[in-house]
Length: 91
Image (cartoon, rainbow, N blue to C red):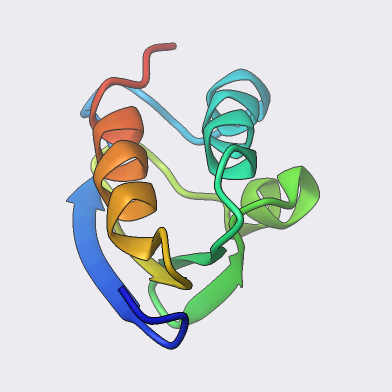
């Protein structure tokens, strides 16, 4: 894929998981594996998916629909892995 490739996806937080420190750290660790630029959004707020403090500042609560966006040559792989990571988060 070309470097300018942009991929998006929406995924809901599991019904029993808030995006607090441990689940957010798991997500950020997964995002850091990819060189693509990755953003996570809840509602109108979009933040750098590789920044733990930014993810925590979203205040995403259980069941919230999150939007993922990635740009770069590995954007599709990043979105696939991160959508799966969100769906599998546990308290």
